[in-house]
Image (tube, rainbow, N blue to C red; front, top):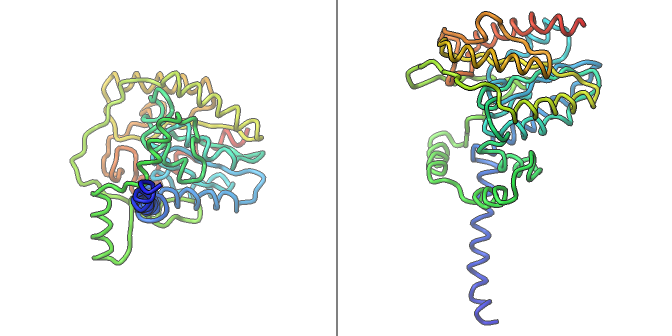
Length: 307
């Protein structure tokens, strides 16, 4: 009994420290906390839109940072919600995190980055953490061992993150993060990120994985079970025009088209060679690029919506 009493203060101290770390990482301060807030804001927007038909756009940041939903909404004449999140969450978690928002008559537009399309198991670095953050531990079938390990680490902020937050508090009086920027009333980002490194063209030398194909097929069935319909779009990328990349993307588009209507520019394969359209990554677009992308999506989606 005496030994237990001696250990108790240490256990209390450890639990308190873990709780503080968890609060920083998940509730307010860490990058995951901003992603969690962004997700719930987008879900609230989707829930608030009452219409017989809506366009719900999902994917990773290659959907979030590439759209002008107002232009799409005006062009198609139906409400649009940008539900794009973050690629490292993983395909499984991204799809499951939004499926409950689908209503009869909705059109779901999936814009997956190649990170998601080529992935062999549907899970990413942030899959377990994101599920915990939104109150759905294990979402997407995260293995128990990984879930346990990642949850424990949520109580341990990285030194780099703490240092960054300390500087922000000292200099600006508030915390910020990559996904901390305000959203529009349709879920679009209201700011843009600028690239600091030199540009290089992204090669794609693999085609759609079997796992991703099967998971997207399952997602189509889940969407249809709720009375919606699925459309897939290849992402815009600042990419290589080498023959292997073109072949990989054509094969990916071919296999996706067997699952659901798949829209993309048949000539360019959505490979862009003008880096001035892009923000900080090979997928994210600056406002001018978002406008061009939105107008192209209107042209490609209009015939499907008319049907």
